Image (cartoon, rainbow, N blue to C red; front, side):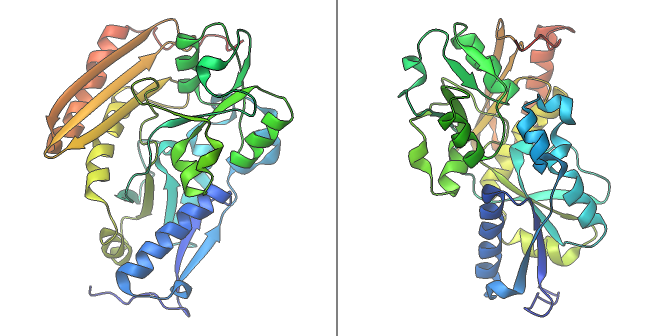
Length: 321
C-alpha cells in the first residue's frame, strides 16, 4: 500500500448513526481494518452523526417511512459529512441504502454477510402460527406488512418503528402482540435469544441486502479505497450486486413491498425475487440460477419480468388500516 496509514494522532474517521446496532457495525468495521493493517484501535475514530431518521419525535410518531422522507432519512447527514471531509468512510446497514449514491461517493466494500432471516419476536407467543385471530403485529416494513397480510389476513397490522430496544419496550407496553426484527441485527447485538423463532427465507423472503454491512467512501479517496479493499467480502459483493440490480430495476424504495435473496453455491448464484401488493392480496415471485458473475444482469432481467407481469398499477398505495 502506497499511502500513509492512519495513526492515533491522525485517525481514520468512521461515520455512523448512534444506535446500538449502528455502533456495533462501526466497531466491527474498525476491528477488521485494525486487524488487516496491524493498527491499534486508536488509529480509528468513531464519529456519531445524528440523522433525520434518529429524531425521537419521528420515531414515536409511528408514521410510514414514505411519509417521513424514505430511506434517505438514515443516510443524508452522514453522506453530507463525508462529502465535506468531516469523516473518511461511513458504515451502513445495506437494506437501508438507496440503490444509487450521491455524486462523489461510492459503495463497493461489504463485510461478510450475517444471518439473512427475519425473526419473529413476541413476549407472549412462540411463533407466527401461534398468534390468535385479531392479534396485533407491529412493523414499519412495507415488505413484512404485505407478506404478513398475504399469510395471515386475520391479523391486525400497525405501524411500529424504532431500534431493537425501543421495539422491545413497545411490546412490553402492549402496543403490539408481536413484531419482526432482522436476525442479523440481533446477532450483532448479542441478543439472538430475543428471537422466538427465526423465519426461513422460504416462508418470508427477506429484504434486499438484509444482513449485510456496506462501507461508503469518497470516490477520490485512494487510501480509503485501498484499505477497504482489504476487508471486502467478495461473496457478499456478488450476492448484493444481483439483489440491488433487482431492486434498482423495480425502482425499489421504502414505498414498495419488494423482497430478494441471492445465494452462492460454488460458481452458481440462485436469485429469488418477490413483489407484493401492499395489502398482500397478490404476490408475484421469480427464481433463476445463473453464473455468479452474471448476477447483476440476472437481477435486472428478473425485475423486468416481474414488472411486466405486475402491470402499471401493481404498487398503487393501499390504505394500511
